[in-house]
Image (cartoon, rainbow, N blue to C red; front, top):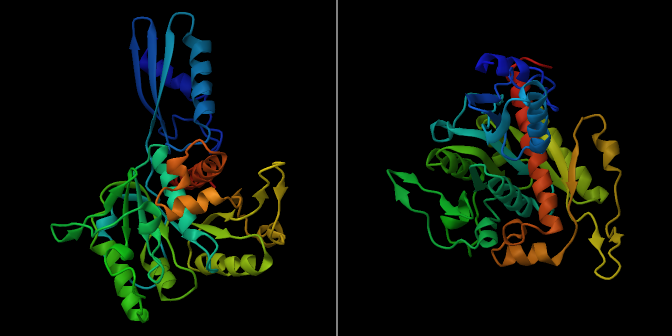
Length: 360
């Protein structure tokens, strides 16, 4: 038995999402053969992989069937997040991308409708990815309502080093918000060109470093900020968010259409405040009238990533700077956020790998 023969056997292990073998995908990083043991290092395409256990078991079973009589099989899972190859369309970029050249994936959380929970989703999505082991950044781009500092309990002004703003490191991730750079008690009254300049500086003048995922908390609407981002920043994908009722869904679809026209893929939609769980009988109560969201999404191939209930714990955590995913990671609602994060990371990985291997 040789290292080459082990790798040849591993070509029969098929990744359940991409549909090709793990050797072709570059997931087999190292094979060591010693007295009585085969140690195999498998690199998942994201630490938040929802099928990690299945992949590990398939690899172990395959090696045991071929070599298990004489060798102990030891499978070690690591992660190797791929850099998204998505590019944006439009005019020549006005943003220097050097400071984000080592950011592998940029994810925008967005809805054309205000008040549907974009910041809450952004925070808990970022925390869920960080909890899984990814290197995560969170950028608050809601210039008129920068709530991220409050939600994460951040006070003070970021440090400057080598003429670059250093993101605040909190709860295992890098964070920056316009609310940390200005007087957050005063309203931001900026015309379009100034907003564009501010967005430009939040990318160019910030030392983001190496990140697997940079989460953008986008403002509502379809104006200068959204167009600047779509035309200048290589956003890997958008996660849309809406509440259940028709008036919110219609506006959310407008936002989906905006980024679709700009060539930015939509990774899915999250339904926030979807229902309320009675504290006595534990039944789901759908408070808001429920629009037929599937009817709106059926022609767009956009999945529903998850439904988040109304729960005082979510609001309390945001108000107190203790988000639910961080403060109560084992809570059933935290697990919903974690599942959403896994689906988002998995979707990005599948897109990237298929593009690399030229698979449609």
